Image 1 (cartoon, rainbow, N blue to C red):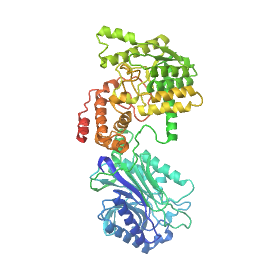
Image 2: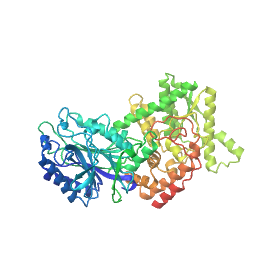
Image 3: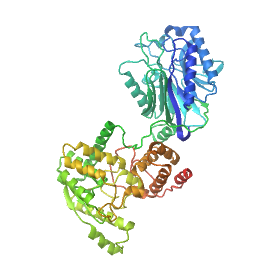
Length: 638
């Protein structure tokens, strides 16, 4: 429960049709198993106390009494369990029968929710037995308790306010206007669906899509529990398909047999996303009855998968598709800018490093879209005090393989003159020594662009912008920053994708790209040692895979330091120890706040993913904001 996580389960008990005593035993056995696993919210199938396939037996008083007695047995057997559970059963009220979910907790029935849409087509005949809607009376007596009855109930946890639970039943999800829509607009963050969906060829895929898309549309957690083994197979087969989804992501599922699908839903994340989205407004709170319940606060053990590199898909096919899409989006952005400005050339500072390599690859793609010759790209390599033969040669080879016009301009003498002008000693390797070179390179690029009627293509990436790892008015500046929305971990995969894609067509291009990938990330602003790079970025600012992880969860989801640290340990704890993660998390916050002034005046650049730091788009932050609150929380973890 801490950090917004609630362990939830969708479960399918073994049933016998019309044997309510047996079914009750199976249900409370499954509830106890869920409790052992730390589950605090459990969804069970539609009519699981009787079995969904009872047919005309639903009209028999004996079955209805058996269902109520079975629920009483469950309440008594589980009154010590700190577990909110939705159980499906038929409920008689005012001479009508309703297909209902009883929401129970610690031996108490919190409320009864009737099914809204009753299917009466194909293999379904629910209108033969059940009534739709609800009667005018609100209260009913069930198992000796006075219970609130209606589809407009939501169940809110007093100890975890962002956990608000709504219920719909099976076909309610399949209808044109789902009850869960209004439940979400009333504040429900978790929807439970008690279902009896029989198996047909291809139906499972549709069911998964339906549940996942509904959770995305409503920005909610969605638990879908389907009846299964033990139901009558006279005309249909049920396989117990249980699904848990959160905001479009499938967290867990299981099919066939009885058991539990278990995962953790992050209700704080859902609340943040709703708060962020101006189009999501909880306008129906006053039209729903909020029924309180309480759960004992505890730390939820995480079993849900946390990706170590959230910007990079783990699946190879998905990664390939993502790389293709990003390259096209970035290239289309640059294409439009080149067209609009009537730029005759695109000028790229080519260092032989990853970022400038990606920038010229995107530029080449844009030139191809414009059906312009590759020679309209001007690749400028500007060796200086820290440039190594390896990076210089790779830059030259890359420009040649792409067909760009290459300019080699040694800026060493110009920088020395500048240092003489300002009184900067050559042996004082401080920030002025480094930034003087970066600004000279930018001046050269801008002037070449002016000479050729061109546009300077920026090479800085999203990770560098977050950390402020750029020289103000140096590499920080360009006329269009194609990499501005691409984090460093993704830059590497994009270049790797192109290397693999070009392997058969141009082996020499593929080879140089592979060598660039093997080169340590460095601005090369300090003199080389024995011809090798002496200045390695990750030794100075920390591992980019950590910083990209921090960036994603801090900026995209607004997580506090404590939660970011917990997730980082879960995802990257096998690579970095606790103290290392804390060290660089503290560094991230310090740098992120201190360097906002650089982001406040960024050049234009295309947004390609869900995280961007453009001051005109997703990120508006005062340059003078203090990091004290965030740093204090990090220090509490040390």
